[in-house]
Length: 608
Ligand SMILES: [Zn+2]
Image 1 (cartoon, rainbow, N blue to C red):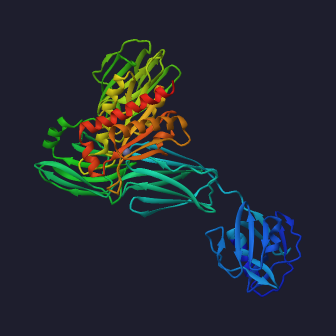
Image 2: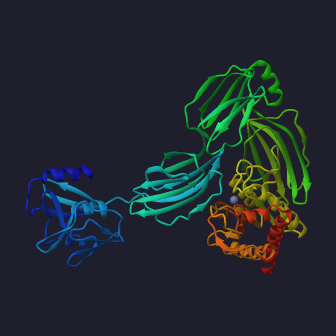
Image 3: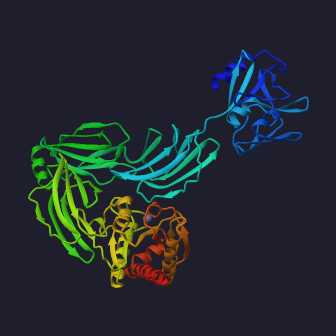
């Protein structure tokens, strides 16, 4: 289209007055009394001529146009156009008392395609092809990275920029947003929130609120834009601390947990998965008592730190650090509990779990695992018919559970090395409630002067668990210790177990250090969750006497993708010194737990 206009301008540089040019719309001639005018090489189209494909209203010095259900007002001799943020580079003009628009008003403002046929002296206007639409936005986590996938109907043109520390903006060009997408509160350690807007006619803008200093990686594949939010490290420093090597990362984001092992060449290797190296790779000769050289570099989506150890130190460290990068499955047993049957695995080292469900089976795949001296103690129950362990690939082991009668399952990590697969009995009589203590592990959540959100949420959750059990509920906790659990894993505890209710516990943080009080959230348009939130919020205010910040609709990812009755409580502001002091006492944490438990009970009673 650009080419056609350039050609047209060149062709018409000599001042031709009213031109014998005919106008066409979608290959049909426009029946008009006024033709285009040319002045100083600029083509002007009579506004009246547009009424074949747009609604046109003329006044003395303005023309109102409604084209493709959008309204524009052009003013005589003015570059401003109402109804769009774009400006004209040439103003509309009047010739012989008639209102004319420069041709660029059609191509730029109304997005009409123009073709020039010099032989026929014909200007053809056509509607532009439909813009690709943003269809969906998905969030997931993978090896310490947060990933957003944006699906569009057609090819994507984009620009990505950092607008200020902790804020990024993504523009999708020539794209439209057909239906509004909710902004989402993610509560991921790297990605906090996402907002989507269509600010101008042909650009959809995403705003990301993220951890300061992180790195974004954007890839496009078959109409899908994948944005990876990654931890970032500038470099590493080597120090010798009393004869032992110490590696210090220089990083604004901080780094997640790493894997470490010593290989046969006496090299200590530290793997930071899902981390981006911002500076250059380096190799430095050290030659102190412990280390010959030290280097760090990128490999795949990990950053590797390598220490070439002196043999004596390698022997000492090898006893402490695994010499084998493979995780070890050391025990596998099953036992009955009040919920049904538990299959418990103890894994030493770092294994990634993937779960897939067949009709009567549950497959749990572990990457990089060895089963050495495995203690096995599996008992047949109503829920579990058999368990077998197979090697499906060189570095993947599979635990295959043959299931009997059961209601659902939940996979919950008990501590750094123990995983429990809870098979829930079919005839469970009590209500099953999932309690989700927010954050954990390398994700501390909001920070007070002394306290961390992740510790308080766990303390409150444990107290709530005890109370609910006393009240006759069955309870599952998404984490029982200071561990990082992905949002998807938290939600799947509720969705795969057939739970009746999910409650996520959080504490608020704000730059306004005076902000205080309790907010209770439910997912948009979810009336049942609203009723739960209302009941819990009311009782929480009664027990804690905290400030009422009301029950709110919240686009939290864990509420948008969960079972029907899912709520999230922000129990107070850890950034408010007075509230932080209150939360430091067991008694106040207990009051919060009592409020939630009372609220849930009053909710269930209201249904009777
Ligand atoms: Zn939180």
